[in-house]
Image (tube, rainbow, N blue to C red):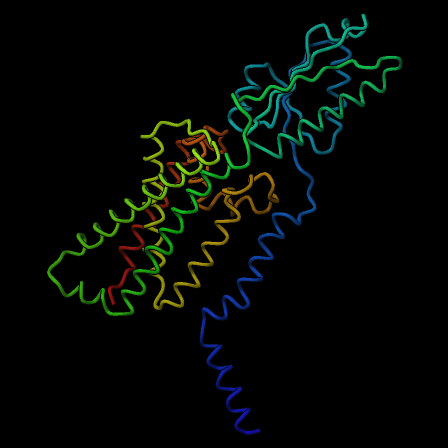
Length: 361
C-alpha cells in the first residue's frame, strides 16, 4: 500500500508538471465549450438591419413602416434608394425594402403592388431569415385586408450577380486559417524547438548575421503561404466552383501581408515562451479563439454583442474580411483599407516586441 501511494503521488506530480497535458485535459475542453456556447447558445434574437425606401404621404406605406418598426428583431432605417443601397453594399444594412410609388392607389384599384427587397446574398443565413421575415410580414398585411387574396408581390434582388453559398464564404476563411497556423505552428513551434535543442545558440555563435537568418526564415514562410493560398484557391474553384473574382495582384498582396502578420506573431509568442510546452499552450490559447471568434467560418453577426470588442481586436477578423473582399468580392465588415491598416499595425507591434524580447538561448 505504501508503494502504491508513493507511485500514485509520483505520477500525479509528474502529470501536474506537464503543462501541455494540463492544458489538453482541462483547459482545452472548457475553452471549447465556452466558445461554442457563446456562439450558439446565446438567447439574443437575431438583429436585422432593414433600410426602407417609401413614398412620402402614402397611407399604406406609412402603415407598413409602422408595422415593420414594431417587429422586435428588425431595426428600420429610412432614406432614398441610392443611399440605402450604398449602406447595404458597405455592410451597414442586411436588406433594403423598396415600396412603390402610388401604393395606396394601386391597391384601391385591386392591382398588385410590386415590392422589391435588395439583400446581400453573401450573408447566407442572415439573408434567408430576412427574406422569410419580410415575406411573412407582407403575408400578414394581406390577411388583414378583407377580400384581397394577394396584394403584394415580393421581388428578391440580390446585390451580387450570383447567389453566395456557404463554401463561397468559407474558402477565404480557410486561407486565413492556414496563414494563421503557418505563423503559430510553423514559426513559433519551430523556433522553440530550435532553441531547446541549442540550434539557435549555434547560429548565434556563427558569423552569419542574425538579420540574414531571420530574413531567410521569413522569406521561406511567405513562399509557403503563397503556395498554400494557391492550392486552396485552385481546389475551391475547380472542385466546388467557387468564383474567384478579385485581381491576382490584390489577392497575393493580402496573402503576403497576412503571412507577415502571423509570422511576426509567431516570433512574438516564441519570445514570450521559455519552453516548448509553455509555447504550445500559449499557441493554443491564441489559436482557438481566433478560429472561432474571427468570423472566418460563420458571420460575426451570429455572435453575442458582448464578444464584439474581442472579435474586433483579433487580427484574423481583418485578414478573413480582406480575403473575402479580395477573392470573392463579398460585402465587407470594414473597408479594405481598414483591414490592411489593422494587419499592418499588428505586424509592426509584434515585430517590435519580438526584436525587444527575443532570446537566442
